Length: 130
Image (cartoon, rainbow, N blue to C red):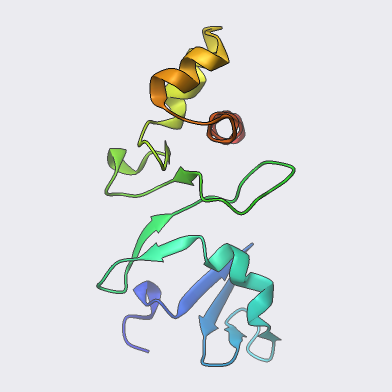
């Protein structure tokens, strides 16, 4: 595989390194171990690739107990210098956290940025975890 370390076929999850083959994921940690694609799809689907097949955008896993699978937070070197932002509006998660810590009403923050409650709370959870 040419340029393996930046190739779309190279996948990762929880400390594992995998090569995406046509019908299976081959673990590169233990050559004899084959992992089923379905086990990792949720994590692997959180990476978007550009037209050049290089990773472009990353969407961290939702920290909500109800994890709906929505891609609410975006980390991309092409937006806000790689800092996490709320995907729908491009506002940094840090800005939301700073205003919440300043005791501004949630409704005011959400209205100012045009975000919904799920986006607001996910931004706070993301910042609290980082």
